[in-house]
Image 1 (cartoon, rainbow, N blue to C red):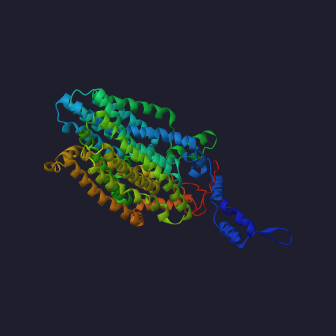
Image 2: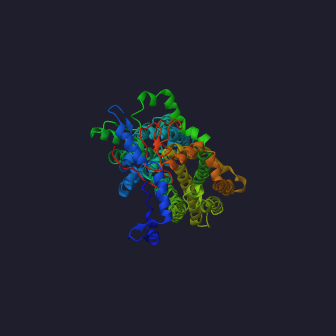
Image 3: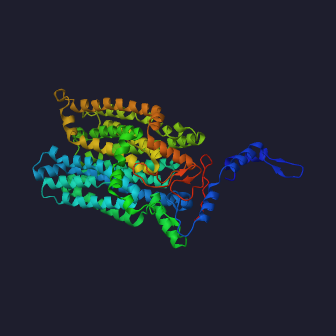
Length: 586
């Protein structure tokens, strides 16, 4: 707390300097007031050092983020951060690739095992529904054990459960393998949680946009690749391809991606410092007995954390339902592609390639978000105390892109009658739908990671649950919906897509309500409020965890002037004073 002014104010300092008769500099009145105010505050760094000097041989000091911030993921080089995120990008692509490639095996499964194509679609349905619960069940454990082991275990199990499907002697084996594969998939909740490990909230948006693209992109990569496997290979190759892809990226992740979860890294740093001759230093997990951390009660509390957040945190509930219903509409929409493009005589490969149009929409949305990020960051910097600028401004661009959903659907509905209308017309509107899907997912995830920081895996698990569960439930009725609505008129495809557009119009209205009522939702979200208060206590930086919150036993939240509950010493920052870390090895 030296009272130094930020660099941006340095030029002003010269204008206010005065020289007395002895030639000494005298600071302006304002600078003197600031210095006096800072001097009157307790200096956490001094308190930190005084307490450590009193530690006896048997005392245990719990290391804080301030003691090792330069060794945490936040301080990694940009090159290292983006390498890690690129591998996570591919991991996420592989997960969503598994959900969609199966559809190209439906015809072969139906023919070989004597089930209807509707029955064969149950393999896609069961994977998505169990995937929804997998996201929720894996997410909290990545916050307890770390991202790396959870992703490795998830990838391993997903790959194992591909085998009974690829080698299936009957349809029941396929259903069991798909169900277990979906339940074993950690999903975007864990991969998105890693963003909170590597970036502070003011700098996270480019990373969020990157990982969100991997999620939506993986879903359309499946049918693009699947078109070729369906036309030129047997149905089992649709499963073998998933296994080859998943196995390859698991090996790359195993050998090249380090742990990023802050509390796990702090445990390792503490062990390292004890070996270096500091026997009193302990990590946040090391001071809690194993039997207390993983008692039956704690395991159940941890496991239900994402579900509890989903129903008790209005932010999580509302944004997840918005994203979930949007994704369900789009999922039903793409189920029509085979029916639509067979009117132009498309074969399996050409139908698969038609999904590139949605991918073009995703790329356009990604690019369009870049100037929005810059505007958003400038707004946050200019209004640091304005909560709407810090949170709801992240939804601002969605106000302009969300209407693309009903526009794209209605335009698609009335350009799919077949020749003489060119097929490219419907694909243009499909790209517009893609813009909306990416924008809704991107904006809601960005908001939730900002609000829930270290618990963003659990928070975004609700988002993933809503998207996957609703999409899974609609898998089986989607094709009959397009085939039977308005059949007598001969415009069944047009009427079905028009109904989706009408539902999308109502859904988009919710975006504007959420934007204007966001502060109310946050005030009614107790966990989000606790995290916001904890961030304020440490000068706006993310905390690694919140003690006793939704089953968390971590003791790493600053209180008062940086004094942490359950810790011998405190942080080196004071709310409102920017980042002034001790950076002192203990």
